[in-house]
Image 1 (cartoon, rainbow, N blue to C red):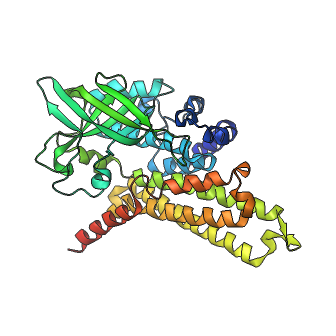
Image 2: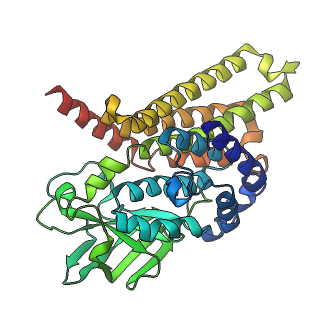
Length: 389
């Protein structure tokens, strides 16, 4: 599937399956009811859920740049839906990149054949928060795994996990060496829903991004066999550094889609709304606001595409700040754009009936989601300091 075909497929999917129901699902009181399996299945039918899966396993084999473009297009319809798919697409890339041949042969056909097969990553904990973004030597996961003769026994809890209550497969990070920090003492495990000792808990009642569920993962003596270790024991973070190069770009693409939706609605609104005897767009002060919004969106998109392209072509020189900064910039841009757009819509934008306020709530999510912006800036600063020595 070419990038153009993939984006057009996503656009058609949004028009047919997402846009008609997004507002209604967003308003469900029970957060679990905001999620839609129908949307997932219709995306699966179009090949979007397995877009990044290797062609030899029946997937689209999409690169990071194509995936980022598709994620943005889905987010224009609803950011929560884009997150549901983006999490799965990036974790498919990580899984097939880090897995052994045996693991690929055993797991990837299940991913391909189950139209409801979503993936999730278990990192964030109630106690550790941003520690895994900025690891420091004494810090470790509270969730721990103890080695036995035949595998590992895991105990602990993860929180705020995207697709947490919906995924079939999980990449779970647990502390396997209590004497080391996160970088040198944690391991990535593959866990399938239904494993003994593994349950999901509280589903978060979020302000925005409601069509994606975030939930607790709870482990009480959960047994994982040795063959379900992904990568090397005690080197779980190598899976992230080596096989997650575009994760930040995908998060950036999700929130950028919200900005694009707000901008496009603003252009339509200002062409139709008459104030002071002429359409709003004819007023210079309004037109310059639209121009600024357009500029910011283009700049953020260029940064995202640069990061995604570099992730596909690391041999050209990978800048590690690209794994932190695109999301910071895109989320800042999205917040500026939606608040400017809210002002242009006046009271109509503030009323729930118009549906614009949903974009404001959605954009607010990524100021902290996928890493708090200030934390990611500190992470990038550490890379810059290291390169300057």
